[in-house]
Amino acid sequence: MLSSREVEKKKNNKVVEVGDVKVGGEELVIMAGPCAVESREQLFEAAHRVKEHGGQILRGGAFKPRTSPYSFQGLGEEGLKLLAQARERTGLKIVTEVMDSEDIDLVDSYADILQIGSRNMQNYGMLKKLGRVDTPILLKRGYSATIKEWLLAAEYIIAHGNPNVILCERGIRTFETATRNTLDLNAIAFIKETTDYPIIIDPSHGTGKRSLVTPLAQAGISVGADGVIVEVHPNPKEALCDGEQSLKPAEFANLVIKLDKVAKAIDKKLAV
Ligand code: PEP
Ligand code: MN
Image (tube, rainbow, N blue to C red):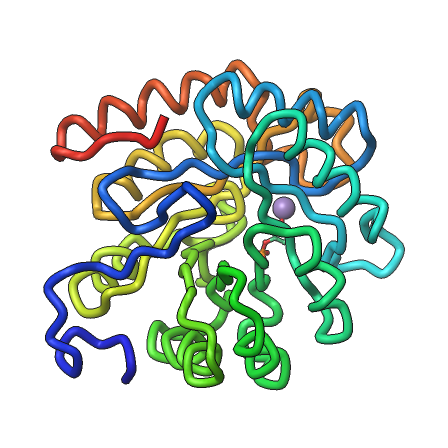
């Protein structure tokens, strides 16, 4: 496989550059923001709090993959415009999902990182097209995908010309129902040991519960993740999507303090 340590005998991890933010380098990167872009007020408030408390990259979906076709589907291009304005105001880079091959160029014209969601991890036609852009890709693990299937999905993008892939472990489906998904910490340690990909962890979707996000983010960093992506909402009770797993801004501030301590304990540091 193209990125296997065995084949390339690389000593160093691959670093994906998002402007001046480096994912997979010396410093741990924090990506945070609402599940979905809902309004100017909501997004700007979230963005300012993410910046203030130490994030580097703002997340927020403009195109949302919802289980029900009757749920809020996202603001589309209007959401992308708001993300670009939030970047302008805060200096944060932006990561947002592209759900459909047809929208790659549109989303790419706004985003600093293109997120490929769990449901699209094996959309091979789309993965091939993502090889034609050079924007970094955040490839989330399919919720029923093995590690091997996930790594091969990453290779689709690389083999078609875009080497800038960041993996994201977001939990898999198991027999367990107490939590939304089962965050696979093994995958983080295994991928760090056997590949040179940067990999981040998403404890928001990985657990589905606000109270579990910080402990699992700490665990992810402990086992070698290069950063985290977490959902933060100014008022989770009013969220149109994933409020129950979204941190309040003060909880996000606390998460960053805790991750700073974990980072120091394993001789790493946050990018703040
Ligand atoms: C998200 O990041 O909001 C999302 C929909 O993630 P996933 O594709 O991992 O479910
Ligand atoms: Mn979400």
